[in-house]
Length: 231
Image (cartoon, rainbow, N blue to C red):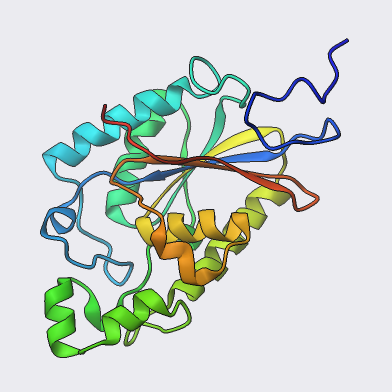
């Protein structure tokens, strides 16, 4: 009989028992017009939707997601649940994944993008022109909220609640969560127990995949960060 000490893949986080975690595949939505203009696109408005390139990215991401537990990361369970942020871009990306996986899309506001408040739709240059120094402070100080919006820590708190609800619903399974850059950074950072001041250091490209694994005893593993799906 194979020992559970030798059954873990090379390079994986070590466990000294056979307990299985919840696996969460964090998929960022595909490209939108705001992605290309580099404007701050949050949860204060439902749109925008995907561009033509974003729809292609969503289809490619769906193909990669389908391979999880099969030809990619074969130690992970094949995805059995699909959750999306309520933003249009996330739901459109999730729809492509749903077609590939044959799963319904469940919408959970816990995984929405940061609410940028008065910064919604503005570029960094426009924000810095109207609120000198405040955008830099928002990035450097995770407790500092956008005017009329959220801080990075605010996002982390609700994403954490969303992950805990998924964990409470059962382990030894894989859930795909279609979300956004700030929310995915917060999920990765909080899973690792990293200080909130460094969460913004994680690169999360459009339609990229990150994978976190959470055990019921609080142990955790970050298996993948920001893997492109359009290659």
